[in-house]
Length: 544
Image (cartoon, rainbow, N blue to C red):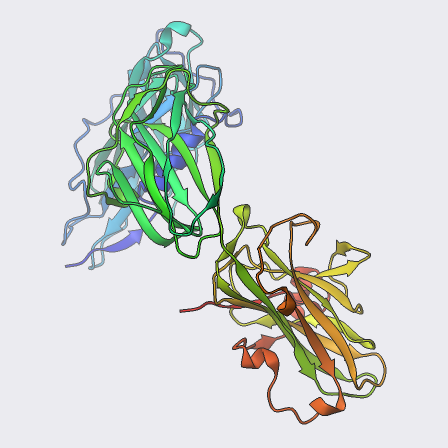
């Protein structure tokens, strides 16, 4: 019989959650104000005697047909304390799961945090009013919704330098009526290893499809030796990583913002100050449509018991090793980006529109944009716009709003700016010239369209405006920014035409290009956006 959730109070210990927990150990939370810290180097008050902890009834999940609500404590398996007076909050959570049949709600729940294993290593401090301390033991109650107290306590390393590298254990126990008893532990270590990576040189003049390698150099900049090291490399648009090493876990395809990702684990003790390097460069290659691309790489010291299976599929070849690299590498940091530029081209084509003539006060819907005819994909680091559409409306025609598609592209922000004297300003109705940024990633064959509602300020017929595509950076489009190496500059400009010849036109250029629009205008939504009657959005059509 399948189990169903009675109440889920914490997410499972996924890799991102574990990473967030590890990051939290390096930050100093706000000072708590509830109870004075308990120093275990002093004689503690007589502690409460908790029930003898028993292991959870099922470490992997609840039974198929439970007779009482199943519980599980979720907390990081390892906690590193900085060798300062900075406090760290472990913040454990409890998950409750009932069966398919109705079960009585748990009652009289008690959550015990036994930190007596930290004597001489760290002090604890109660930081939630639902918890009390007796010596080294903290006891917490639950609210009516079965939620564990947020940040029940904090842990601070003792001020003695001799505590460096020492470890202790915090033990958690949940008991109560109508619920299974569960326990868990956290190993606490004073001091932290700190892995950083050296900057790799950027490379230009590569060929599409060319093999590349990343000879990453790492250094332990912390104050403890490592137990295990995780090296993470993410290849962006146009860069693939080969699944070659069995100690690397790979994700391939559109994973997050990247095309491919590798996380390599090394069970290697690297001493503080020691520098190591990959025994051979991490292999990868450029795709056939690569142009501007890059890899983001970082390293982190992780516990020996880290679950590596969640990082993807293991490679099929031999393990990748680490070798001593004394004197190698410069500009060490937790994360770096290395850029690769291939000799490729991207034919970016402007797309205009035709409008019927009309009398003063008439309104029309205008569609315009661009198409990447390839062969290269166009992408920029940090997802800055690689391309812009610079539109000048025909004389006598002004924009009143930007319409929103029902399903806008998540890669494009949808902002269009009023463009005056070479400077962009927030969108304002009543102007003729605007600048609309494209997404930061444009595959070959993709188009990007923008949709204005325009108003005729006078009787309009037989006038023309322009649509230009430009490369550039976020502030000065086309001025020394992002080079797209367009092989056909003649199609970088298109017209917006209003005239008698268009009055009976049955087709519009944007429609012929396949850029449809499903507009809606909502005054309430516009008000929420704080732009009056203006609603921003874009439409993106990806090639299949």
